[in-house]
Length: 155
Image (cartoon, rainbow, N blue to C red; front, top):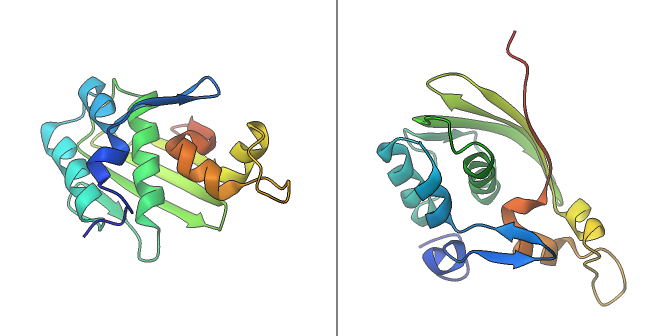
């Protein structure tokens, strides 16, 4: 059983555009990526069985869906990176997920702030009471709710 309410393939393999923001399909992101075939297969399996594996590591209590969104953003912003595995660490709140994703084998590290409330405000997504609708923003925009996703200095 997947952690998605509808078929993960149907949901994540539909490229769509909302307010001039493109949310690429998983198929497209993996197709453009120079990640290894083993990593790509691990991502496809992660959609079906959302738990750490040899290519996708994260801590107990870290929401798998937010880990998945972090991977999708990495694939979108850096298709040129050869990815064998990732380690995702962070702190999750109701509206946000702040943390890092480290890419193996080269050790590049990216800091991020996924924030669906920010996206709701930016795109004027409101609920029936006129407040920012972070749930709808998270559902509609998915991995495009990253307020920041930047490579950290290698020192």
